[in-house]
Structures are given as structure tokens and as C-alpha cells.
Length: 174
Image 1 (tube, rainbow, N blue to C red):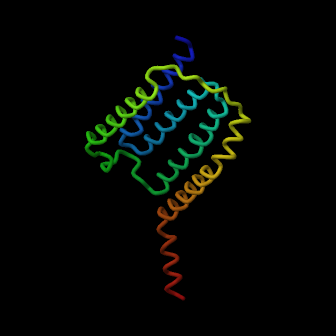
Image 2: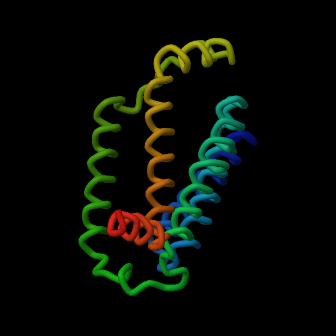
Image 3: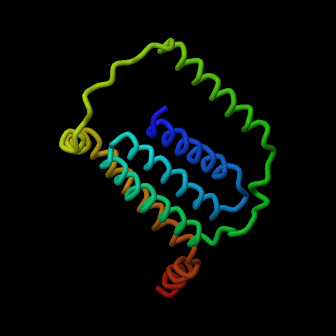
């Protein structure tokens, strides 16, 4: 077993554990922070695979932007910071669905590859990755950024009840 194999297993375990904590914690802010740990571990996996550009994009876009936006939205909407009774639901249906989906994906993977070795394509370069990103994926990326901006503006409007009151009082005068 090589050092890369050990690092891959360790980072995969950290990502899996943090991902489980994201969905099982009763604290919304802690769930966001565990998401940072999970996404950071995935960035570490990209570094082990020598995909440095993808790793830094993972850190900048997901950890640096999406999670911060999520935490700002939670804080702006005045969601409960502590343990929430709304998150305390029966867990066995979700666990059953998750276990079924995991078993189905494992069966699909085993059936598709049948334990054979798959030839890996030629390693990509930053130039090829950039060309694919800006030709194929630029529109979905921009749509997601507009969606996140709209969500943030909506969170601000929802968290400020005085904005709606000011508009209705101005209409009543005119």
C-alpha cells in the first residue's frame, strides 16, 4: 500500500464521517461547519490525485463561497442556532432509503465493472480543464451563481420585516 493509498483512505474516511455529521447533527450552524470539513477533505482527495487546480477551485468555490453563503443565509433568516426540535424526526425511514440507495449503487458498480481494471485516460492539464469548463459548463455555473444571489437577496428581505412595512405604509399615503 502506497502513501497515496493511505492518504486516500484517510481523507475518504474524514469526508464520510463529516458528511454523516452534516446530516445527523441537530445544530444548523454546526452542520454547515461539518460541511466545510467534508468539502475540505474532498479537496485533499483532489490533491492526492494531483488535480491541484480542481482542489483549489473546490476550496474557493465550495468552501469559500457556497458554505459562507449558506451560513449567512442561516444567520440572516434568524434560524435557530442551537438544537432544533424541527430536526428531531424519526430517522429509520431516512436510514432505510439511504441504505437502499447505497446498496443499489454498489450493485450497479459491481455489475458495471465486474472487478476488471479500467484503462485511465491521459491526465488532464489546466489548459484542457479550462477549455472544457468555459465551453461546456459556463452556463450552468452562471445560473447557479444567479440562483445563489437570488437566495441571498430573498434571505435579506425575509429577515427584515421593516422593508415590507415601509412599502405598504407608502402605498397607504399615496
